[in-house]
Image (cartoon, rainbow, N blue to C red; front, side, top):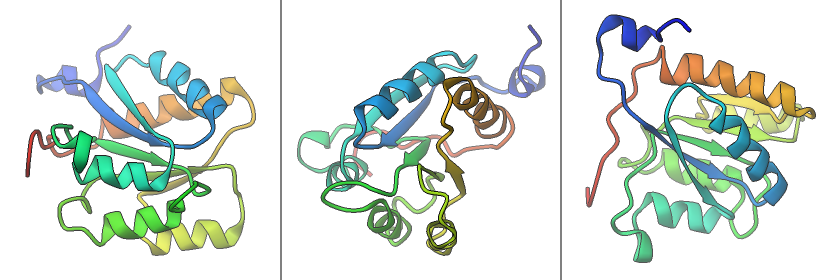
Length: 159
């Protein structure tokens, strides 16, 4: 197994925290399994609806001591607040707007893709139908976001 680019360059290797915002138990289970197969150490935190995701990100109520994620996987079709509304609020919040957001949706509708990019999503990925395809997508995300791109160190405690 060859070392990752960050290991070869001598940079500090760290664990990455992912906020997975999805109301489908089956989808979150498959995503957790795919992420567990990565070489990179990850912690996955799940929000089942848009309101909870924003509470977590804003460290409200029981989430006051939670660290901010390194990256967010956001489904569009969520209860309480849609993924579109969550994305708009993240991008409108100076404390949150620098967190990369990957829209991870079952929709391949041109309007959903265009709207997500208009709201400044970092990427739009249609959920793969097969688990092996999901693992390949997650591996590609790992290669780019965790081994190539330089992400901000996540904030801990109260900002």
